[in-house]
Image (tube, rainbow, N blue to C red):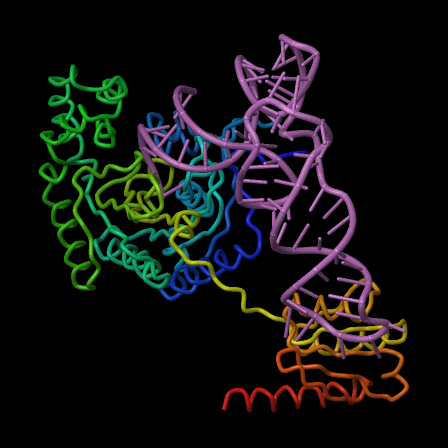
Length: 425
RNA sequence: GUGGGUGUAGCUCAGCGGUCAGAGCACUGGGCUGUGGCCCCAGGUGUCGAGGGUUCAAAUCCCUCCACCCACCCCA
């Protein structure tokens, strides 16, 4: 048997209900916030991710699905969405398009990690970006949209963690201070962090090793190094969030795994879904568009992990049911039934039938398994009388209706209507 | 990349050196010759994850590999 590639998943009914529910909910909310959907390539040039995410991040160092295309160019399955959005934004010169200020996209991302609960090599994200606005109101709106989606989905117990990473003006001072501090503590650091200390000292904050954590506790904090502008920005973001009643928790150690973030960063964690408990994350990236060759343009975005979100949602019960199942007992019956089916479906009604000739018993059985509300029986006897048998599967009540679709369908539909009135009263 | 756990029917699992590989659910047919759910009966359920080894004898013991799950690293 040919097996699925490791870490990839098949999404099948009845699970698909939950996927559609989450996507539809997010879509509706984002559209109300004025976001427009974009659909972008899954494959991008590797360089895009090297330059955006950062060469010394875990994603780039060990998690990318990269390969050499037939024309020898290095390409990579996107490990996150923002880089592609920015690339498209620059490529199409969208700086002044009113619809390009707020964009969202839903689709799969790829990271080649060891799979575990809540972590897959292909995972799905809902991404939203506000582009071209550097002020704190954009931050507040993006977090507000994220929070509204989580609330609409009735996610319980999630926590929004907030931090600021400063800007290109103030972050270097902090980086230096941190590097100085860490260089005196090298003995206590794990091998990974010794390397990080030189290359990308902020990443030490993410370390879970006991020794490193202790060192981190006394380390300089980013928020103490913010320049006045960054400070003001961050305070205003918090004010807006409080204004809207959005709860959040400050986390001065939140640095995020991508190098392009500036100022506001956030992450949403949720309990009860295993070790991989981050269901969403994001932040501001005011330098990225310029760094990728575009005009200087501030932006902020978030990503929601659909796979992880779904593990927090209860099963959605299957309440779809066909209105009518056609039990067709002979060749002539099939011909009549085909017309019933076509005409009813044109009216938007779900009609089922058996595709192999079998006994009435087995057709009834199938109707029952499909949970059809009505069965219309058309056989030799019915044709002789010119009247088909209509059985209500819930009440077991059977009545006759004209067998010809032109007369029978109106009769059928009026009966349904009456039934619904009596049921609802 | 590292560690631990698990691989037997479509699903959930039992068997853990000694005839034949089993149960429940699901599936198909019949009891009911043209009427579903309940009940009864019958039936396919399978390279016992793959390959090799030990043994008179391997689903069972050993080795290797593979897959899945969980955890570490890190993140969605």
